[in-house]
Image (cartoon, rainbow, N blue to C red; front, top):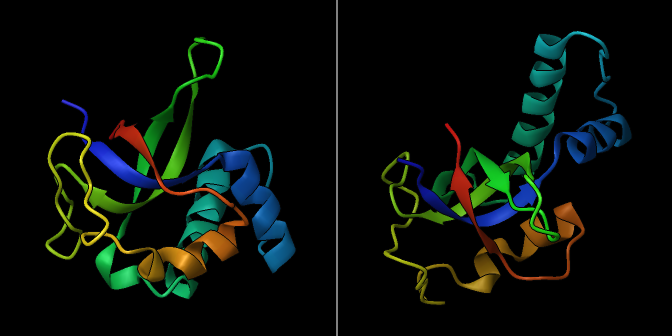
Length: 126
């Protein structure tokens, strides 16, 4: 059963572009090599975000705004229904109290991802 994650999603395309900006080469063509590059970029952002020890990076489904099939992305998970480790806060349903994930704890991540909105809910696919 998929786990509900609360955080920020970044597409493979965005992560590869961000990797190029950071000097991490996109190997192109080979799916496995692209995933290694995406993992390197995700890890770099995750470590720079200052929330590494209280968050996780999960593969999630992002619904399409027009009701289509949606897409997959990597989520910088700030809280989860079923956390992958003991450091990620647990929540139940779609009620995440601000005290569980205060904005001060993820403000730097928002800046790194260049987003101006709060975290969203996504279902994990792994």
